[in-house]
Length: 404
Image 1 (spheres, rainbow, N blue to C red):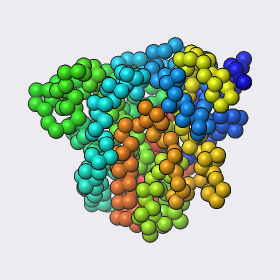
Image 2 (image 1 turned 180 degrees about the vertical axis):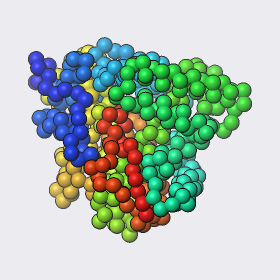
Image 3 (image 1 turned 120 degrees about the vertical axis):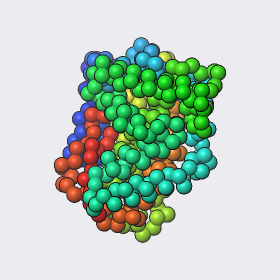
C-alpha cells in the first residue's frame, strides 16, 4: 500500500495547455500515473490528487472525507480560497448534520417538478434575450449579450433579487471566483455581497413575496448570517456556472459542425448532448477539496487523517475505463450521442450540486433555441484569440464574438 511520499510530484494549480477544453496537461499526467497521486499546494502543503472516476465518487460520498474547511489539513489552492471558505461559510463547506439542515431549507425550489414548471418562463427569457440581441444587429458578444443575462435573470427571479442590481453581484462574483484575487479583495467582495443580501432579506422579512429569500427570511430557525451565506452561494453559483457552460458549449459545438448539424436535424438528441457537454467541459476543473478525518485506503493508497484531497472532476469525466468503452469515441472527444449520464460535473454524494435540475433546463433551452433560431451562428475571431478563464474557479471564456 502506498503511503505519503517524501517528495510531492505536482505543483498546483496547473496551467492549461493548447486545447482549451481538456483538463490541464499536468492533471492528465497525474491521471496516467495513477488514480491517487501526490501533489504540492501553493502554500507548500502536501495533498492527494484524486483523478479516477470511482475514486472521486468515493471521496465525495465517504463521510471520512470532510468538506469542512476548518479542519486542519484542508487544502486551499490560493489564499483567496482560504479567506472565502473560513469567513461565514455556506453549507457546501459544512458536514452533516449542519449541511443537511441548511440544504433542506432550499431543496424544494430545485426539485425536478418545480424546475419543469419554470421551463416556459425560462423559454420566454431566452427568446426575449435573443430578440434583443438580433434586433441590435447581426453580431454580438454571446457572453455579455446572451450567456450571462439568461441565468442571471432566472436566478434573480428564483431568489427574489432585483435584476437591476446585476452589475453589482456579477462584479463581486467574478472577484470571489478569481484565483488571482488577494484575500483582502475576496473578503471585500464577500462582505459587499453579504451586506447586500442581509439588507435585502431584512426587507423581505417585512414584505415577503413568493421567492426563496422571502421564505428563508421569514423562518425562525435560520440566522441572518446563514441566510446571507446561502443566498450568496446560490446567487453566485446560479449564474456563473450556467453562463460559462452556455458560452463554452457554443464554442465546443461550433468547432464540430457535423455534431451541430446532427443536433439541428434531431433535437431529441439535445438532452443527451447537454450531459455530454457537461462531462466533456467540466467547468470546475481545479477539483473539489476535502480532508481526511480518518485514515482511509483509497485506490491502493493510504490517505492519512489530516491530509488534504482534491477530487478532480475534470479527469474523472475523462476516465477511459468508463467513458471510452468499446464502440464509443475516446473519452477526450466530444460525442453528442454518447451516454454520459454517469458524469460527475455536478459532483457526487450529499454535496452534489443542488441546482443541477435548473442548470440542465437552462442549458437545454438556451442551446436548442440558439441552434434553431440562429442557423448561421458562427464565431468571428480565430479560436486562438479567444481568452479562456483558466484563472477562475469556474472555467469559461471571457468574451465570444459571434455573427449570424
